[in-house]
Length: 148
Image (cartoon, rainbow, N blue to C red; front, top):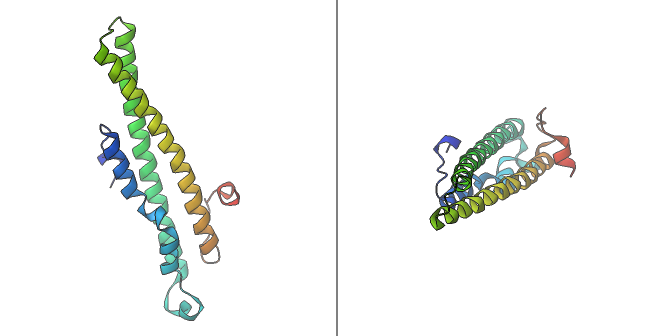
């Protein structure tokens, strides 16, 4: 699923899409347990390649989610500005005011999703680093994220 295919009109649908996109983060410990073998099976699996591939997947899905949230944030900000301009130009219809409040609420919810995303990223990268640091250390992993 790409950021461009995410619908921003229905917030609940957007949250469902994000939930599906967050499966890798939700199952990161399980994924690492299956990717990195125990001592007795070390010779059968290339742990370096497994960790490298997993990191690429993590990086890709994090980028997709961030782009999707940012896209919807920008769309919603545009709608809020448009509705505010109508209101500021003297349009006091109750439906306009209601729509403006709904869009402002959606905007706050999207900003909260961005904060949630940061927490999820930090947790996933930290767990990844703890398990894969002996096999593969990506050069661009933020050490501040790992040490928090």
